[in-house]
Length: 237
Length: 228
View 1 (cartoon, each protein chain N blue to C red):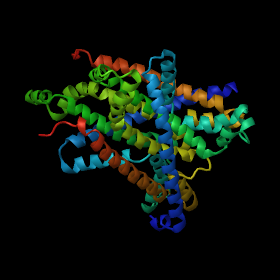
View 2: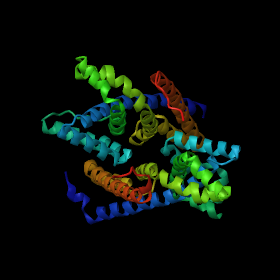
View 3: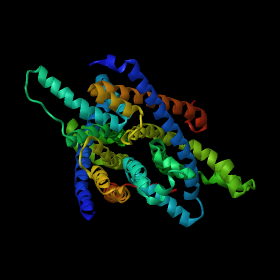
View 4: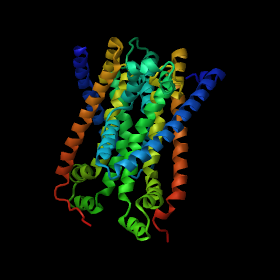
Protein backbone atom coordinates (compact mmCIF):
# COMPACT_ATOMS: atom_id res chain seq x y z
CA UNK A 1 0.00 0.00 0.00
CA UNK A 2 1.38 3.35 -0.97
CA UNK A 3 -0.95 5.83 0.60
CA UNK A 4 1.59 8.63 0.25
CA UNK A 5 0.67 8.88 -3.44
CA UNK A 6 -2.93 9.77 -2.61
CA UNK A 7 -1.76 12.59 -0.37
CA UNK A 8 0.52 14.22 -2.93
CA UNK A 9 -0.68 17.79 -3.50
CA UNK A 10 -1.65 17.15 -7.14
CA UNK A 11 -3.78 14.15 -6.30
CA UNK A 12 -5.40 15.79 -3.28
CA UNK A 13 -6.32 18.64 -5.61
CA UNK A 14 -7.71 16.13 -8.13
CA UNK A 15 -9.93 14.56 -5.46
CA UNK A 16 -10.86 17.99 -4.08
CA UNK A 17 -11.98 19.09 -7.50
CA UNK A 18 -13.81 15.78 -7.89
CA UNK A 19 -15.69 16.35 -4.62
CA UNK A 20 -16.81 19.79 -5.80
CA UNK A 21 -18.01 18.42 -9.14
CA UNK A 22 -19.79 15.47 -7.51
CA UNK A 23 -21.56 17.65 -4.96
CA UNK A 24 -22.45 20.25 -7.57
CA UNK A 25 -23.91 17.53 -9.81
CA UNK A 26 -25.84 16.15 -6.84
CA UNK A 27 -27.27 19.45 -5.63
CA UNK A 28 -28.24 20.77 -9.05
CA UNK A 29 -29.77 17.51 -10.26
CA UNK A 30 -31.74 17.18 -7.01
CA UNK A 31 -32.98 20.76 -7.28
CA UNK A 32 -34.04 20.43 -10.92
CA UNK A 33 -35.43 16.96 -10.22
CA UNK A 34 -37.47 18.17 -7.25
CA UNK A 35 -39.18 20.90 -9.27
CA UNK A 36 -40.05 18.43 -12.05
CA UNK A 37 -41.13 15.83 -9.46
CA UNK A 38 -43.57 18.26 -7.85
CA UNK A 39 -45.21 19.00 -11.21
CA UNK A 40 -45.29 15.31 -12.18
CA UNK A 41 -46.74 14.31 -8.80
CA UNK A 42 -49.52 16.86 -9.14
CA UNK A 43 -50.28 15.55 -12.63
CA UNK A 44 -50.18 11.95 -11.39
CA UNK A 45 -52.78 12.70 -8.73
CA UNK A 46 -54.66 15.23 -10.85
CA UNK A 47 -57.98 14.93 -12.66
CA UNK A 48 -56.69 14.74 -16.28
CA UNK A 49 -56.53 11.08 -17.33
CA UNK A 50 -54.34 11.51 -20.46
CA UNK A 51 -51.71 13.46 -18.47
CA UNK A 52 -51.87 10.90 -15.67
CA UNK A 53 -51.25 8.18 -18.19
CA UNK A 54 -48.42 10.13 -19.86
CA UNK A 55 -46.57 10.87 -16.62
CA UNK A 56 -47.19 7.29 -15.44
CA UNK A 57 -45.53 5.98 -18.60
CA UNK A 58 -42.63 8.37 -18.06
CA UNK A 59 -41.98 7.18 -14.49
CA UNK A 60 -42.38 3.54 -15.59
CA UNK A 61 -39.73 3.93 -18.29
CA UNK A 62 -37.35 5.96 -16.11
CA UNK A 63 -37.62 3.53 -13.20
CA UNK A 64 -37.43 0.45 -15.41
CA UNK A 65 -34.23 1.22 -17.31
CA UNK A 66 -30.68 1.59 -16.00
CA UNK A 67 -29.41 5.12 -15.40
CA UNK A 68 -26.32 4.29 -17.47
CA UNK A 69 -28.52 3.76 -20.54
CA UNK A 70 -30.27 7.07 -19.87
CA UNK A 71 -26.92 8.86 -19.62
CA UNK A 72 -25.72 7.26 -22.87
CA UNK A 73 -29.00 8.05 -24.59
CA UNK A 74 -28.65 11.74 -23.77
CA UNK A 75 -24.90 12.09 -24.20
CA UNK A 76 -24.37 9.94 -27.30
CA UNK A 77 -27.93 9.54 -28.58
CA UNK A 78 -29.20 13.12 -28.69
CA UNK A 79 -25.92 14.31 -30.20
CA UNK A 80 -26.70 12.09 -33.17
CA UNK A 81 -30.00 13.73 -34.02
CA UNK A 82 -29.60 16.08 -36.97
CA UNK A 83 -32.13 18.48 -35.57
CA UNK A 84 -29.87 19.10 -32.57
CA UNK A 85 -26.66 19.02 -34.57
CA UNK A 86 -27.98 21.88 -36.72
CA UNK A 87 -28.57 23.99 -33.65
CA UNK A 88 -25.96 23.15 -31.06
CA UNK A 89 -23.32 25.49 -32.43
CA UNK A 90 -25.25 28.71 -32.08
CA UNK A 91 -28.94 28.40 -31.10
CA UNK A 92 -29.16 29.03 -27.37
CA UNK A 93 -30.56 26.14 -25.32
CA UNK A 94 -29.11 23.53 -27.64
CA UNK A 95 -25.50 24.72 -27.22
CA UNK A 96 -25.59 23.04 -23.80
CA UNK A 97 -25.78 19.60 -25.38
CA UNK A 98 -22.12 19.90 -26.33
CA UNK A 99 -21.12 19.96 -22.67
CA UNK A 100 -20.72 16.61 -20.93
CA UNK A 101 -21.57 18.17 -17.55
CA UNK A 102 -24.94 19.36 -18.82
CA UNK A 103 -25.74 15.98 -20.41
CA UNK A 104 -24.96 14.14 -17.17
CA UNK A 105 -26.96 16.70 -15.20
CA UNK A 106 -29.96 16.36 -17.51
CA UNK A 107 -29.93 12.58 -17.28
CA UNK A 108 -29.64 12.63 -13.47
CA UNK A 109 -32.40 15.23 -13.08
CA UNK A 110 -34.83 13.35 -15.33
CA UNK A 111 -34.02 10.15 -13.44
CA UNK A 112 -34.49 11.49 -9.92
CA UNK A 113 -37.64 13.33 -11.04
CA UNK A 114 -39.19 9.99 -12.04
CA UNK A 115 -38.48 8.33 -8.70
CA UNK A 116 -39.36 11.34 -6.54
CA UNK A 117 -42.62 11.99 -8.42
CA UNK A 118 -43.89 8.51 -7.55
CA UNK A 119 -42.95 8.92 -3.87
CA UNK A 120 -44.63 12.30 -3.64
CA UNK A 121 -47.71 11.09 -5.52
CA UNK A 122 -47.93 8.19 -3.07
CA UNK A 123 -47.81 10.58 -0.11
CA UNK A 124 -50.45 12.84 -1.68
CA UNK A 125 -52.79 9.87 -2.23
CA UNK A 126 -52.26 8.70 1.37
CA UNK A 127 -53.30 12.02 2.88
CA UNK A 128 -56.06 11.13 5.29
CA UNK A 129 -59.54 11.93 4.01
CA UNK A 130 -60.43 13.73 7.22
CA UNK A 131 -57.82 16.43 6.66
CA UNK A 132 -59.17 17.14 3.19
CA UNK A 133 -62.78 17.14 4.41
CA UNK A 134 -61.82 19.56 7.17
CA UNK A 135 -60.23 21.86 4.60
CA UNK A 136 -63.38 21.74 2.47
CA UNK A 137 -65.50 22.39 5.56
CA UNK A 138 -63.49 25.57 6.14
CA UNK A 139 -64.50 26.62 2.64
CA UNK A 140 -61.10 26.19 0.99
CA UNK A 141 -61.05 25.73 -2.77
CA UNK A 142 -59.32 22.75 -4.40
CA UNK A 143 -56.20 24.82 -5.02
CA UNK A 144 -56.15 26.17 -1.48
CA UNK A 145 -56.64 22.68 -0.03
CA UNK A 146 -53.72 21.45 -2.12
CA UNK A 147 -51.38 24.31 -1.23
CA UNK A 148 -52.29 24.72 2.45
CA UNK A 149 -53.17 21.23 3.62
CA UNK A 150 -52.17 18.38 1.33
CA UNK A 151 -48.77 19.48 -0.02
CA UNK A 152 -47.13 20.67 3.22
CA UNK A 153 -47.95 17.38 4.93
CA UNK A 154 -47.26 15.19 1.86
CA UNK A 155 -43.82 16.71 1.33
CA UNK A 156 -42.95 16.13 4.99
CA UNK A 157 -44.15 12.54 4.85
CA UNK A 158 -42.01 11.94 1.74
CA UNK A 159 -38.85 12.89 3.65
CA UNK A 160 -37.85 9.43 4.95
CA UNK A 161 -38.12 7.86 1.48
CA UNK A 162 -36.53 10.92 -0.11
CA UNK A 163 -33.45 10.61 2.10
CA UNK A 164 -32.85 7.19 0.53
CA UNK A 165 -33.27 8.70 -2.91
CA UNK A 166 -30.72 11.42 -2.12
CA UNK A 167 -28.12 8.88 -1.02
CA UNK A 168 -28.93 6.81 -4.13
CA UNK A 169 -28.39 9.92 -6.27
CA UNK A 170 -25.05 10.61 -4.58
CA UNK A 171 -24.01 7.11 -5.61
CA UNK A 172 -25.52 7.58 -9.06
CA UNK A 173 -23.30 10.59 -9.70
CA UNK A 174 -20.41 8.12 -9.93
CA UNK A 175 -21.88 7.21 -13.33
CA UNK A 176 -20.76 10.63 -14.55
CA UNK A 177 -17.37 8.96 -14.91
CA UNK A 178 -18.82 7.02 -17.85
CA UNK A 179 -19.01 10.29 -19.78
CA UNK A 180 -15.68 11.45 -21.21
CA UNK A 181 -14.11 14.61 -19.82
CA UNK A 182 -15.94 14.56 -16.51
CA UNK A 183 -13.78 14.78 -13.40
CA UNK A 184 -15.95 13.68 -10.50
CA UNK A 185 -14.63 11.66 -7.55
CA UNK A 186 -14.81 8.32 -9.40
CA UNK A 187 -13.07 9.70 -12.49
CA UNK A 188 -10.40 11.23 -10.27
CA UNK A 189 -9.80 7.78 -8.73
CA UNK A 190 -9.69 6.18 -12.19
CA UNK A 191 -7.16 8.74 -13.33
CA UNK A 192 -4.93 8.10 -10.32
CA UNK A 193 -5.27 4.36 -10.92
CA UNK A 194 -4.25 4.79 -14.55
CA UNK A 195 -1.29 7.03 -13.70
CA UNK A 196 0.21 5.08 -10.80
CA UNK A 197 -1.36 1.62 -11.25
CA UNK A 198 -2.60 1.72 -7.66
CA UNK A 199 -6.23 0.53 -7.82
CA UNK A 200 -6.65 -0.23 -4.11
CA UNK A 201 -5.47 3.12 -2.87
CA UNK A 202 -7.29 5.13 -5.53
CA UNK A 203 -10.68 3.43 -5.28
CA UNK A 204 -10.56 3.01 -1.50
CA UNK A 205 -9.95 6.75 -1.19
CA UNK A 206 -12.96 7.37 -3.45
CA UNK A 207 -15.03 4.90 -1.40
CA UNK A 208 -14.06 6.72 1.81
CA UNK A 209 -15.15 10.05 0.32
CA UNK A 210 -18.53 8.68 -0.77
CA UNK A 211 -19.02 6.97 2.59
CA UNK A 212 -18.37 10.20 4.47
CA UNK A 213 -20.71 12.11 2.19
CA UNK A 214 -23.43 9.44 2.61
CA UNK A 215 -23.21 9.58 6.41
CA UNK A 216 -23.33 13.38 6.40
CA UNK A 217 -26.45 13.31 4.21
CA UNK A 218 -28.12 10.66 6.38
CA UNK A 219 -27.32 12.69 9.51
CA UNK A 220 -28.73 15.82 7.91
CA UNK A 221 -31.96 14.07 7.01
CA UNK A 222 -32.32 12.53 10.47
CA UNK A 223 -32.04 16.00 11.95
CA UNK A 224 -34.55 17.47 9.49
CA UNK A 225 -36.96 14.61 10.06
CA UNK A 226 -36.69 15.10 13.81
CA UNK A 227 -37.72 18.73 13.34
CA UNK A 228 -40.37 18.41 10.62
CA UNK A 229 -41.93 15.05 11.46
CA UNK A 230 -41.91 15.40 15.25
CA UNK A 231 -45.72 15.44 15.21
CA UNK A 232 -45.82 11.96 13.65
CA UNK A 233 -43.42 10.35 16.13
CA UNK A 234 -44.88 7.80 18.56
CA UNK A 235 -45.91 9.48 21.77
CA UNK A 236 -43.39 9.31 24.59
CA UNK A 237 -44.69 8.92 28.12
CA UNK B 1 -27.67 -2.73 -38.93
CA UNK B 2 -30.10 -5.55 -38.29
CA UNK B 3 -27.38 -7.94 -37.21
CA UNK B 4 -26.40 -5.48 -34.46
CA UNK B 5 -29.88 -5.80 -32.98
CA UNK B 6 -29.48 -9.57 -32.97
CA UNK B 7 -26.10 -9.26 -31.27
CA UNK B 8 -27.60 -7.05 -28.57
CA UNK B 9 -30.49 -9.46 -28.17
CA UNK B 10 -27.98 -12.25 -27.72
CA UNK B 11 -26.11 -10.12 -25.18
CA UNK B 12 -29.27 -9.93 -23.13
CA UNK B 13 -28.73 -13.60 -22.23
CA UNK B 14 -25.54 -12.53 -20.48
CA UNK B 15 -27.46 -9.81 -18.61
CA UNK B 16 -29.97 -12.40 -17.44
CA UNK B 17 -27.14 -14.76 -16.45
CA UNK B 18 -25.22 -12.14 -14.48
CA UNK B 19 -28.32 -10.90 -12.70
CA UNK B 20 -29.61 -14.35 -11.72
CA UNK B 21 -26.23 -15.53 -10.42
CA UNK B 22 -25.71 -12.25 -8.58
CA UNK B 23 -29.18 -12.67 -7.07
CA UNK B 24 -28.20 -16.11 -5.80
CA UNK B 25 -25.01 -14.72 -4.24
CA UNK B 26 -26.91 -11.82 -2.69
CA UNK B 27 -29.52 -14.14 -1.17
CA UNK B 28 -26.75 -16.19 0.46
CA UNK B 29 -25.03 -13.06 1.79
CA UNK B 30 -28.39 -11.66 2.88
CA UNK B 31 -29.39 -14.78 4.79
CA UNK B 32 -25.96 -14.99 6.44
CA UNK B 33 -26.09 -11.29 7.31
CA UNK B 34 -29.62 -11.51 8.71
CA UNK B 35 -28.72 -14.62 10.75
CA UNK B 36 -25.63 -12.86 12.12
CA UNK B 37 -27.58 -9.72 13.01
CA UNK B 38 -30.24 -11.71 14.83
CA UNK B 39 -27.80 -14.09 16.53
CA UNK B 40 -27.30 -11.79 19.50
CA UNK B 41 -23.57 -12.50 19.60
CA UNK B 42 -21.76 -9.14 19.77
CA UNK B 43 -18.99 -10.06 17.31
CA UNK B 44 -21.37 -11.39 14.65
CA UNK B 45 -23.81 -8.52 15.12
CA UNK B 46 -20.94 -6.04 14.82
CA UNK B 47 -19.57 -7.68 11.67
CA UNK B 48 -22.95 -7.82 9.96
CA UNK B 49 -23.77 -4.24 10.92
CA UNK B 50 -20.40 -3.10 9.58
CA UNK B 51 -21.05 -4.99 6.33
CA UNK B 52 -24.54 -3.68 5.72
CA UNK B 53 -23.67 -0.11 6.70
CA UNK B 54 -20.40 0.29 4.81
CA UNK B 55 -21.55 -1.39 1.59
CA UNK B 56 -24.73 0.65 1.39
CA UNK B 57 -22.70 3.85 1.74
CA UNK B 58 -20.44 3.28 -1.28
CA UNK B 59 -21.50 3.52 -4.95
CA UNK B 60 -21.84 0.19 -6.79
CA UNK B 61 -19.52 1.39 -9.54
CA UNK B 62 -16.67 2.26 -7.16
CA UNK B 63 -16.95 -1.12 -5.43
CA UNK B 64 -16.98 -2.87 -8.78
CA UNK B 65 -13.86 -1.06 -9.99
CA UNK B 66 -12.23 -1.81 -6.64
CA UNK B 67 -12.93 -5.54 -6.91
CA UNK B 68 -12.10 -5.79 -10.60
CA UNK B 69 -8.86 -3.79 -10.72
CA UNK B 70 -7.83 -4.06 -7.07
CA UNK B 71 -8.80 -7.72 -6.75
CA UNK B 72 -6.64 -8.81 -9.67
CA UNK B 73 -3.56 -7.08 -8.30
CA UNK B 74 -4.31 -8.24 -4.77
CA UNK B 75 -4.60 -11.91 -5.75
CA UNK B 76 -1.49 -11.79 -7.91
CA UNK B 77 0.57 -10.11 -5.18
CA UNK B 78 -0.63 -12.79 -2.78
CA UNK B 79 0.34 -15.55 -5.24
CA UNK B 80 3.74 -13.96 -5.75
CA UNK B 81 4.35 -13.84 -1.98
CA UNK B 82 3.40 -17.49 -1.75
CA UNK B 83 6.11 -18.20 -4.31
CA UNK B 84 3.81 -19.11 -7.17
CA UNK B 85 4.66 -18.21 -10.75
CA UNK B 86 1.08 -18.28 -11.95
CA UNK B 87 -0.96 -15.13 -12.46
CA UNK B 88 -4.73 -14.98 -12.33
CA UNK B 89 -6.98 -12.60 -14.20
CA UNK B 90 -10.38 -11.92 -12.70
CA UNK B 91 -12.98 -12.24 -15.42
CA UNK B 92 -15.37 -9.30 -15.76
CA UNK B 93 -18.21 -11.86 -15.47
CA UNK B 94 -16.98 -13.20 -12.13
CA UNK B 95 -16.12 -9.72 -10.84
CA UNK B 96 -19.60 -8.52 -11.79
CA UNK B 97 -21.44 -11.44 -10.22
CA UNK B 98 -19.40 -11.33 -7.01
CA UNK B 99 -19.53 -7.56 -6.54
CA UNK B 100 -23.19 -7.16 -7.38
CA UNK B 101 -24.04 -10.17 -5.20
CA UNK B 102 -21.94 -8.80 -2.35
CA UNK B 103 -23.48 -5.31 -2.61
CA UNK B 104 -27.10 -6.44 -2.84
CA UNK B 105 -26.45 -8.95 -0.07
CA UNK B 106 -26.18 -5.91 2.19
CA UNK B 107 -29.62 -4.71 1.10
CA UNK B 108 -31.02 -8.25 1.37
CA UNK B 109 -29.64 -8.48 4.92
CA UNK B 110 -31.96 -5.68 6.00
CA UNK B 111 -34.92 -7.06 4.04
CA UNK B 112 -34.52 -10.57 5.48
CA UNK B 113 -33.89 -9.31 9.00
CA UNK B 114 -37.13 -7.34 8.90
CA UNK B 115 -39.00 -10.34 7.48
CA UNK B 116 -37.74 -12.74 10.14
CA UNK B 117 -38.62 -10.28 12.88
CA UNK B 118 -42.17 -9.99 11.49
CA UNK B 119 -42.87 -13.68 12.12
CA UNK B 120 -44.68 -14.11 15.44
CA UNK B 121 -42.29 -15.43 18.07
CA UNK B 122 -44.76 -18.13 19.07
CA UNK B 123 -44.14 -19.91 15.75
CA UNK B 124 -40.49 -20.57 16.56
CA UNK B 125 -41.22 -21.37 20.19
CA UNK B 126 -43.77 -23.93 19.06
CA UNK B 127 -41.17 -25.48 16.74
CA UNK B 128 -38.67 -25.73 19.58
CA UNK B 129 -41.34 -27.19 21.82
CA UNK B 130 -41.80 -29.90 19.18
CA UNK B 131 -38.09 -30.64 19.53
CA UNK B 132 -36.97 -29.26 16.17
CA UNK B 133 -33.35 -28.22 15.91
CA UNK B 134 -32.34 -24.70 14.92
CA UNK B 135 -31.83 -25.61 11.25
CA UNK B 136 -35.10 -27.55 11.14
CA UNK B 137 -36.93 -24.61 12.64
CA UNK B 138 -35.39 -22.33 10.03
CA UNK B 139 -36.14 -24.58 7.04
CA UNK B 140 -39.61 -25.71 8.07
CA UNK B 141 -41.05 -22.76 9.97
CA UNK B 142 -39.14 -19.52 9.43
CA UNK B 143 -38.19 -19.73 5.74
CA UNK B 144 -41.63 -20.50 4.27
CA UNK B 145 -43.23 -17.77 6.37
CA UNK B 146 -40.61 -15.08 5.84
CA UNK B 147 -41.02 -15.23 2.06
CA UNK B 148 -44.28 -13.32 2.31
CA UNK B 149 -42.82 -10.58 4.50
CA UNK B 150 -39.61 -10.34 2.49
CA UNK B 151 -41.19 -10.16 -0.97
CA UNK B 152 -41.92 -6.40 -1.24
CA UNK B 153 -38.34 -5.47 -0.25
CA UNK B 154 -36.96 -8.37 -2.27
CA UNK B 155 -38.81 -7.17 -5.38
CA UNK B 156 -37.33 -3.69 -5.00
CA UNK B 157 -33.82 -5.05 -4.51
CA UNK B 158 -34.17 -7.33 -7.52
CA UNK B 159 -35.29 -4.50 -9.81
CA UNK B 160 -32.36 -2.33 -8.68
CA UNK B 161 -30.02 -5.30 -9.10
CA UNK B 162 -31.15 -5.86 -12.70
CA UNK B 163 -30.39 -2.26 -13.50
CA UNK B 164 -27.02 -2.47 -11.75
CA UNK B 165 -25.90 -5.16 -14.21
CA UNK B 166 -25.57 -2.40 -16.83
CA UNK B 167 -22.56 -1.19 -14.84
CA UNK B 168 -20.67 -4.40 -15.56
CA UNK B 169 -20.28 -3.10 -19.13
CA UNK B 170 -17.89 -0.48 -17.71
CA UNK B 171 -15.43 -3.18 -16.65
CA UNK B 172 -15.64 -4.82 -20.05
CA UNK B 173 -18.29 -7.54 -19.83
CA UNK B 174 -19.95 -7.77 -23.22
CA UNK B 175 -23.58 -7.63 -22.11
CA UNK B 176 -26.37 -5.58 -23.69
CA UNK B 177 -25.16 -2.13 -22.67
CA UNK B 178 -21.60 -2.82 -23.81
CA UNK B 179 -22.78 -4.19 -27.16
CA UNK B 180 -25.17 -1.28 -27.63
CA UNK B 181 -22.30 1.13 -27.12
CA UNK B 182 -20.14 -0.77 -29.60
CA UNK B 183 -22.94 -0.94 -32.15
CA UNK B 184 -23.59 2.76 -31.82
CA UNK B 185 -19.98 3.75 -32.35
CA UNK B 186 -19.74 1.40 -35.34
CA UNK B 187 -22.91 2.63 -37.05
CA UNK B 188 -22.94 6.21 -35.71
CA UNK B 189 -26.58 5.86 -34.74
CA UNK B 190 -26.52 5.50 -30.95
CA UNK B 191 -30.11 6.62 -30.42
CA UNK B 192 -31.84 3.51 -31.74
CA UNK B 193 -29.46 1.06 -30.08
CA UNK B 194 -29.70 2.62 -26.63
CA UNK B 195 -33.48 2.85 -26.97
CA UNK B 196 -33.59 -0.81 -27.98
CA UNK B 197 -31.45 -1.82 -24.99
CA UNK B 198 -33.59 0.28 -22.66
CA UNK B 199 -36.68 -1.46 -24.04
CA UNK B 200 -35.11 -4.87 -23.39
CA UNK B 201 -34.46 -3.85 -19.78
CA UNK B 202 -38.10 -2.77 -19.49
CA UNK B 203 -39.22 -6.15 -20.78
CA UNK B 204 -36.98 -7.90 -18.25
CA UNK B 205 -38.22 -5.82 -15.31
CA UNK B 206 -41.85 -6.22 -16.39
CA UNK B 207 -41.55 -10.00 -16.61
CA UNK B 208 -39.89 -10.02 -13.18
CA UNK B 209 -42.70 -7.97 -11.68
CA UNK B 210 -45.30 -10.30 -13.18
CA UNK B 211 -43.58 -13.43 -11.85
CA UNK B 212 -43.01 -11.95 -8.39
CA UNK B 213 -46.67 -10.94 -8.21
CA UNK B 214 -47.63 -14.59 -8.82
CA UNK B 215 -45.16 -15.73 -6.15
CA UNK B 216 -46.57 -13.18 -3.75
CA UNK B 217 -50.11 -14.44 -4.38
CA UNK B 218 -48.95 -18.02 -3.79
CA UNK B 219 -47.25 -17.23 -0.48
CA UNK B 220 -50.08 -15.02 0.77
CA UNK B 221 -52.63 -17.85 0.51
CA UNK B 222 -54.63 -18.20 3.65
CA UNK B 223 -53.60 -14.88 5.15
CA UNK B 224 -56.37 -12.64 6.30
CA UNK B 225 -56.41 -9.10 5.00
CA UNK B 226 -57.80 -6.44 7.26
CA UNK B 227 -60.50 -4.29 5.73
CA UNK B 228 -61.34 -0.81 6.84
